[in-house]
Image (cartoon, rainbow, N blue to C red; front, top):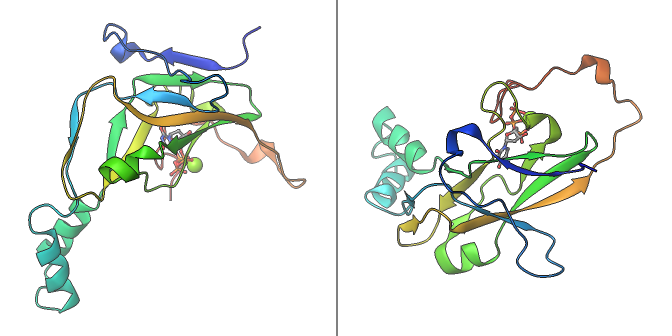
Length: 180
Ligand SMILES: O=c1ccn([C@H]2C[C@H](O)[C@@H](COP(=O)(O)OP(=O)(O)OP(=O)(O)O)O2)c(=O)[nH]1
Ligand SMILES: [Mg+2]
């Protein structure tokens, strides 16, 4: 029976990716690997502190300073090349690996990632799962393709009594695709 699982998105079909896997017998999380080599710069890099100081002391409230600070604090999206299918009453929760903040200062700024069942094969991006990351560490972090960056836990979810499924739209993407 097909219940839930992972597939590689078309874009990465020939990229020799590994499907998420559990590392120990009773591990709840399927570890997701990065599909690419990428560098996550430390937020403290360059002039970030200077920009913050200037804003705090109103030395530079210029748009350029604010834009620079916003850019530095914008999370990176690590592509996994993976999509997940599941039952309509299930969700895949993406959580950080506990070693990431400890060893590398890597934080998932959305707390957890919620991967909806209707994200799978959506028309916008085929349902590729991305891991949002900010690097609060002192040093830049280099992530290699195949490095484990987060874990996904399948869970059932419940509906409220007042839930009106007639009002709901078809998902066409992620990351704000349904509007503000
Ligand atoms: O860490 C994450 C979080 C979300 N998603 C994808 C799967 C999810 O189904 C979709 C939408 O996520 P969510 O509902 O949390 O974000 P939103 O800001 O409400 O976007 P939307 O308007 O598309 O629902 O984005 C990821 O790939 N990684
Ligand atoms: Mg949403």
